[in-house]
Length: 427
Ligand SMILES: *Cc1c(COP(=O)(O)O)cnc(C)c1O
Image 1 (cartoon, rainbow, N blue to C red):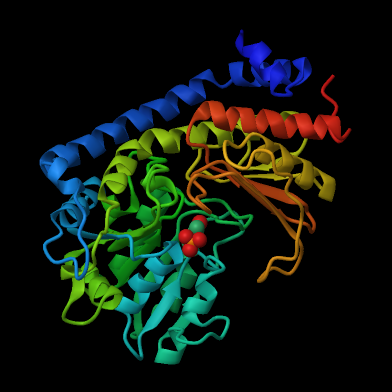
Image 2: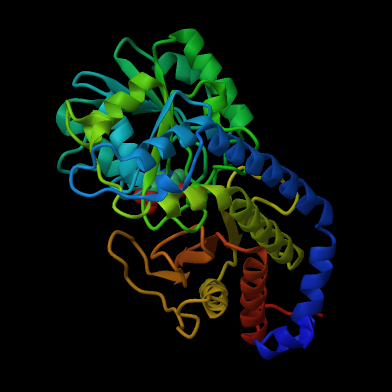
């Protein structure tokens, strides 16, 4: 059976196939560049693994207190070398990205200190961590104040306002690399590097923390290569390579990581404890796969941007722009567009591919939301997934794809659903 017959069996029409092929043919150079970055990052990971003499022994887990968990300790050394930092904390008991960010902040801020975000409003879940929205146990409850400088209209840092916002109590500067689910641009490592240099020139004792979620391995460099004191992320996104079943990481200076460790466990115990149970191997192997998995997700995002741009929809980032994270937004302008898109992503999933998603009133959202995901690791957004709030401008956000053929199929399926519903006409 040929590839096109296989697509046909899975419900992709000749028109969708032909349209997709045209778009894909125009992306060869783009994809070559993505592969080059992945190649570099693959070598970076192997180099760190060789340096730290990763061996089968390190795949053994520990239980109880987790003293002398060599696999865990060595994995942290590998992460530190990949990100070119002094130390790293990489743990299954960091339960998600928000938790990792909360540890990084609470570990390094003390009562009376101020946290300053220079990339505007932080990711939704951090609002309660910081206390922007009052919450039990927030930094605000511990006497840590917060201030914020928004990005400028063109998405760049507002340097003058940053200079004015820094005061004698400012201790941590937070920068969020990815736009997350906002409409602003994602920041490039280069832009972040310039901002770090700027704030360090004002006061080199300031601790710069970068929320690195969705950004890892998209480029050959990371914010930690340019003086970020901590970079923070989730293992069920890029750096877990789809194999990590849970976890988060913080990589940074020895002092910051020590503070984080005392916050994660307890003062005094720090990094010495924390059993890895039996997941070390998945974390090592996931990191090993992360560069190419991230490349697959990136190709999927570029493919989708070009498909939907060609059909006249607004896509962020646009089809040509350089990429700094793996998230793609497509604005449909009507609820049915979001719904059919998500149905297509779901229909292409290896897990729960028979399920039809529907919008529902999810807690914490001010409108109905539809979500498509068929993941091996629950909630993993490095796996092909999409979601959209059912409210104007009726945009869908999607990301992930452990393999490019899967991402490609998912996007073709989304287009098929839109064609079948009469929302999109191809010829
Ligand atoms: C995913 C994400 C987080 C953390 O989210 P979790 O769901 O807690 O892992 C934080 N910031 C950004 C920009 C993210 O994309």
